[in-house]
Image (cartoon, rainbow, N blue to C red):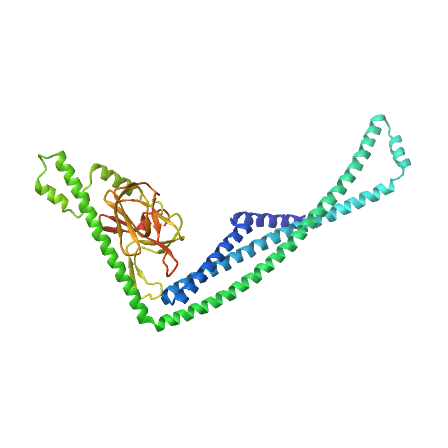
Length: 421
């Protein structure tokens, strides 16, 4: 009895463990398929980069991403194997319990058959009834004989049912063990591939060290381009502030021509911050109230470069600056407004991409790296409204949106504004 209780306790513990694991085999298989597809995409990009003899830094970044995906694939397969181990253990516990139940049922059934055999003659059954002291006892004995026969039949069915269950669980374990062996072989193969990828990465790293001067110059050049674009954005923001203040000054002069002086109008127009009207103040307050709750400017994506000063991913001694966040998304993805506001600027920052500026009181959100836009200057946009398509880089194959938030001309960290970033 103590062994039975221990077995049931073990079964119960492992059942709870199974319930606490959210992913099923099907979900893990789907995750694996998705990761394998991403690995194939990275392989295609690597081939493209190598064939075009592009930047070794780009190749290094792609190789690093591919290794990361390989590691994810290995971890997913390991989870599948662990899940199968748990299933196999639970099914084995069930088999052990069924074997114990069947042994007991067979013993009981055998004893019943022996007893029935000893009292098998019709004469002994008749005598058992006729020897009753009264009619009530005879009736009860007849009922007992009938129930005894039914119980015997029921035990036969129970033995047959448990035997079928035992065969079912045994077959299931055979299939699960085969699947487990397949996963182990698959994982070993992936680990071998991972080691090869790491060697390729080491080779690229050595090449990077060899061409360090050239690559450092390349990084600095890109940073200069970024700073140049930031300067353009600052200029455009200042223009938007001046334009907003000119409109406010004109509206005040029209509403109060007697009390408005040329000096006060000039001071308002020259202000470096937006002078808010009551309506503009309301918009700004609403925007500020949603800090940390704004939706992402893309439907799906991941931050590939955060805000602020940070070490270069390869050359840690080289600091790089980012005035916003860079979000890598899917090819063909669209940028969307994070809050309601007015489109104040649509500017082609380079021959390849466009930026859209949206004003929210004295706040601005900027959406860079668009290949096309769906809005016009002066349009009122709502939260999550599509602004345009995000450009896919022909060299890297990546689709990256650069997103900025400013209050007047002061940059803010978008991570503190967007939900769950």
